[in-house]
Length: 134
Image 1 (cartoon, one colour):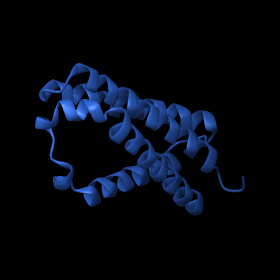
Image 2 (image 1 turned 180 degrees about the horizontal axis):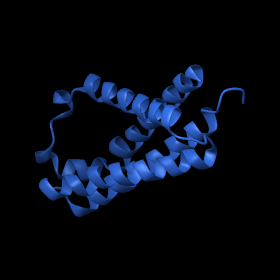
Image 3 (image 1 turned 120 degrees about the vertical axis):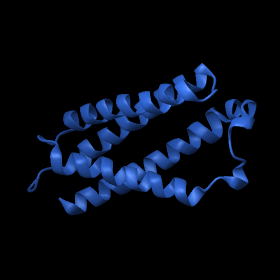
Image 4 (image 1 turned 135 degrees about the horizontal axis):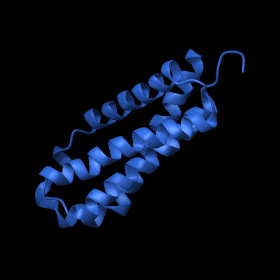
């Protein structure tokens, strides 16, 4: 199961990295430009830290599923992704909105994006992480 956990972690990390680029650099770019006073400049952002956080979150997400969720199935992976996606999306979107002067539309976008990313990640781990012998 360790090999499948490693493969799932890599799949989730790559998927999240691609989606984060599309969401934040393409879809939400104009929103970020309109609220530029709230963010660090691109030169001041710590991309190594952001990438490291995505990798650690991927590992934790997959490890929790691998070692604590039973039965392991596509359905379980999707449900797991939905639950964590809802909780973390709520925190990311509306939690941030509660103390940052971001537009409500950005809070909704962060919530939806997180929810979708976690559902896709749950789908991946449901497909990749199987019980021993399968």
